[in-house]
Image 1: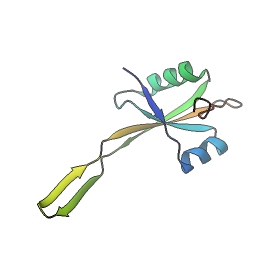
Image 2 (image 1 turned 180 degrees about the vertical axis):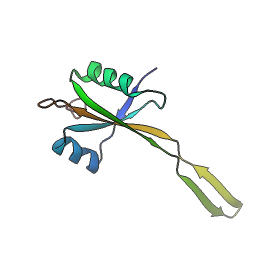
Image 3 (image 1 turned 135 degrees about the horizontal axis):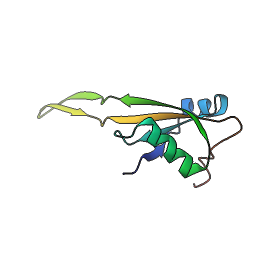
Image 4 (image 1 turned 45 degrees about the horizontal axis):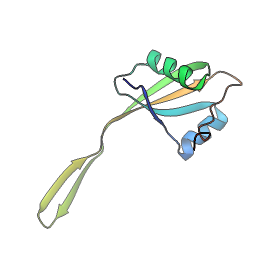
Length: 96
């Protein structure tokens, strides 16, 4: 089971990484905080102080088309905000 799916790179996540030394990742929905901490420490070689998780619900949409009403939804995801120890950092742009 792959725990870390991808890092989240948005304006809000970048501001958190610069100000609070906290990085955001999209993670497996079945992963818990201990597993996420171990995965980040193993993948990036840093020490993690705190892990906060967020379950994002799917967004439902309705479209009115010629053939009728179309219902749809996005996928539910789990996000993790990982706060690193003082002086540690993750370079997310190194592999691009």
